[in-house]
Each structure stands twice: as structure tokens, then as C-alpha cells.
Amino acid sequence: MNKTDMTHQWHQTNEPSTAHDSKTVTRLSPEAFDTFEKALNQPIPETARKLITMNPEWL
Image (cartoon, rainbow, N blue to C red; front, top):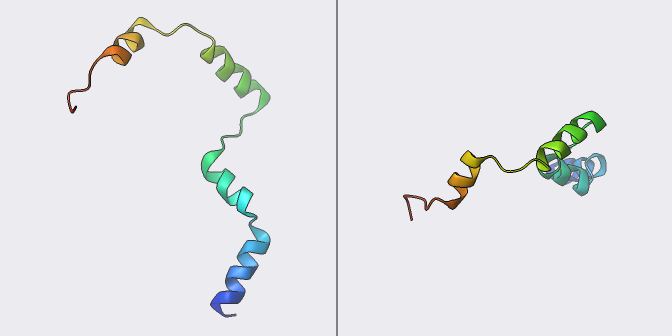
């Protein structure tokens, strides 16, 4: 099998969206999503709020 055939075979079995999704999409179970959503809906902790307002030393 030459390189062109190998590339063609890879594209047939690995749709571009699937290959892209594996690097950019996190899939969660319904329970994990509920936990994640609850965390997003919580107020920002004071420690995190202070970090957000700090100027980075490297700038």
C-alpha cells in the first residue's frame, strides 16, 4: 500500500469532524454534566476573584 492509498484509507475511517472533535470536544455523562453545570453556577470564590484582578508579573 502506498502513501496515497494509506491517506485515502485513513480519511475513510476517520472523518475530519471526528478527528477534530477528539482534540476539541469533551464528552460528559449526564451526571458529570450536571456536576459541571452546578460548578459553573456557583459564585466565584474570593481567592479566584483576587487572582483575576491581579496584574501578571511578566507584563
